[in-house]
Amino acid sequence: MRDYTKQKAMAGPRPVVLSGPSGAGKSTLLKRLMKEYEGVFGFSVSHTTRDPRPGEENGKDYHYVSREVMQEGIANGEFIENAEFSGNMYGTSKASVEDVQAKNLICILDIDMQGVKNIKKTDLNPIYVSIQPPSMDILEKRLRDRQTESDESLQKRLDAARTDMELSKEPGLFDVVIINDDLEEAYGKLKDVLIDEITKVQEANKS
Image 1 (cartoon, rainbow, N blue to C red):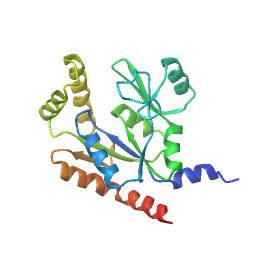
Image 2: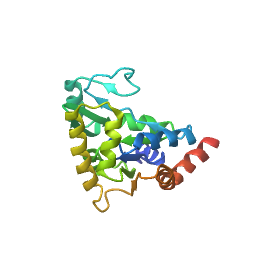
Image 3: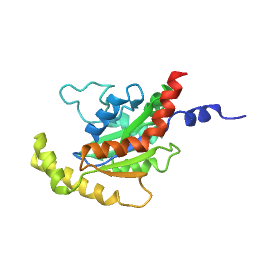
Image 4: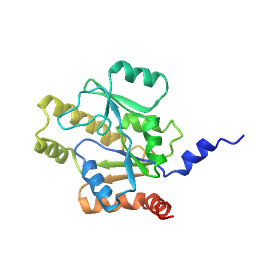
């Protein structure tokens, strides 16, 4: 008997794994992409054990869960990837990606480097894109300008960014590494790598 469920899942648009340090400009590029190609992309909603920030909604920004619930889900193999950052757990469940694919949308996964390596072990077959800052100095300035971090938190982010920048150079880890020095240029490169999938979704939505 043929496994139609798996065949159907693979027939959906390929997800996109977007990685890169905080402050590299992923959010800016994503917002632009979603605006230009409305109705093409969807986000898998990640799980986290951290508390919601002001204005964040459960089920929209994150699924806010207890550590016990999250650990149980991970133990049951329900997560594609998970990581711990600043004392909080974060993860992407298989169900949240399948929900997006089922709507014939390209699922965007905003994932850290540890998560990228975990996804490599699954049969998800996404397009791997790394967004990197031009330099550590520029990244630090961008993060400081946000004024949302304590010094300690900023140092943690910068340390994580250093590791991220080094790992992104590993051959074969990403399909494309985009250095976000010039926003127009970075956006053009991001579009180029996704255009085949975008076109497929647009064609399918027309029919």
